[in-house]
Amino acid sequence: METAKTGGQGNPPSAAQAEKDLAYRTGVGNWSAFHLGMDAIYASARKWREKMEGVPRAWLCWNVDPDWCLVQQRLAASVGWTPLVGSDPRAEKPRLVPGAVQIDFNADFHLPTMWMHFPLEFAFLFAERLAFWHSDLLVRREKLQRIAENFAALPDGSMTVSVPRRGLRETLFKRGTRRYWELIGCTTRGASRSQFEQGCGWWMNFAAHPNCPGEDERLRRKRFYWDHGAGILYWAEKCGGQVAKIKEAEVEEGHCTRISNVNYQRLSPDTAERLLPTELRHNFSLVKVCRDLGLEDLLKD
Image (cartoon, rainbow, N blue to C red; front, top):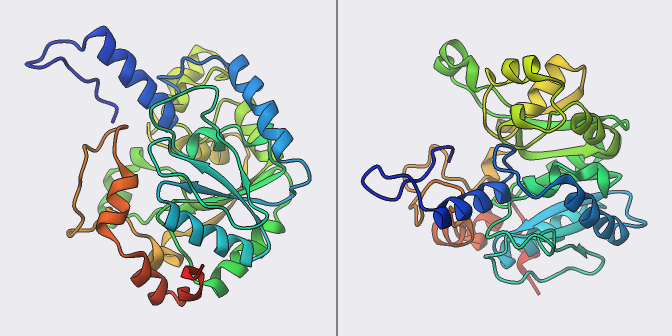
């Protein structure tokens, strides 16, 4: 995803291709590609905040497939949270449960793709408390109830993250690939604001964050992992951030992912242009996943 595209046979990309690549990389949340300007973010966030008035506990359900998103909304609502629905612009229009809030986070930007990391980076601008999870994750209701109660109890200024599984080889020889994960978690306004002010956060290449305090620090941060969530790990370990953790193993049974999945069929390149809206439905049966997790009742209209 971090490799620049070429125009074929090793030629540099055309101006049009470079502009397209920049837009895609911005949409997935990548500070090294960010070109919109913070004034544009602040202006859009004022609209987002208006829609969130009176919502103390929102759960971001990112729509890449309307059927999967609908089940996620019902599940979030069943544990007492307000579903907040955003969308990949390539996905079909979502259906909403009663009480859900829908925000088009891409309305002012017209990016060709948008991942949930985009608004998550700026949560302090529109949400008091924001839970989130991958679009391809479902969790048993009783387990999610316990998780939701822990999210609700988080003091302002702290957050919950997921910790990805790491084998012995990764632990010993790939310390430079450490990060926290957004598989499931929750942030508070104070935590999100602290991360932004200190130039850390969810986006890729957090060393390129506009609030990174000086070039010496930027060079230091470049030695850390480039992927999503490395900035959150840095915030916790180097900036005193308060983080509670959920191990990947606690929720992995409902994670419909390509990771370590030998049967997964890719329908698009593994870049910012990846077509998760198509791949999720192609590789997994929502009905089967819900049955396996005791969530079959959430499929009924």
